[in-house]
Length: 251
Image (cartoon, rainbow, N blue to C red; front, side, top):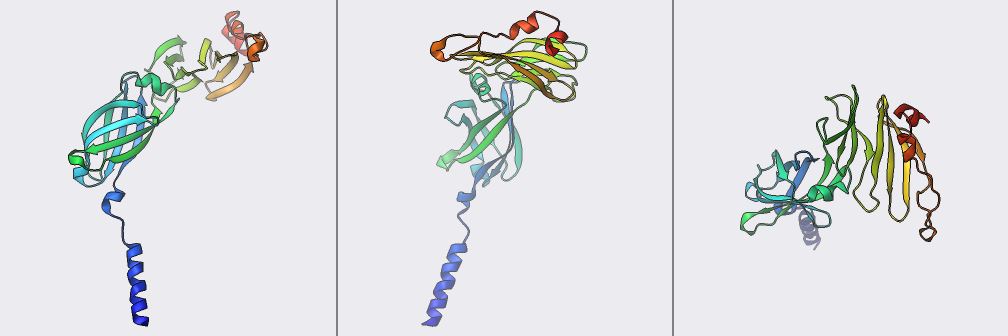
């Protein structure tokens, strides 16, 4: 009787420690991912942790709420080896992605042929801009200011380094944007404007040496509509428009 019990316990322990089926461990691993607004595409470094037959199929990219981010494309990935691929953004995807800011979360799926179970992956797209990106909105001998529509205003002081994000913008409900931008090296002064029911604005001073905003002056809302709880009429935009950039920035 004792021998039967020991054998039963051994069999149970072996069953509990047995490896899960291989298919349960098959994944689509994302090593790196980036959004390139100038090139209107995303780049991904993927590793297919599955047999070779499951690593070939159609790759899809969707936002977390199910909106298509990039055009579906056929891929043939090596098994358990990293490979870098590019996917062209879907129509209007860049506008949708801009509302998520500098990092956007995306669901990936690779559907193999022949009805095999699809592989799932997850990517956090980091925005990639260079000194050649966007539209120039101001310049000096040492600084180029440019806007990447929907994402923000950047400053380039060295073409070999990543540009500084000076002001974040969002084409969303609040409509946050940078206005009246002025260069007074090593400073960039700008007014942040936005609001929904109540408008707001603030004057900020960005230090290109410290790579951060070093001073902000916030106004009250520019609306006096008491029905929306709005108070005040201060408007800092006129500070920059009324004088020299340096005097305005340091006022």
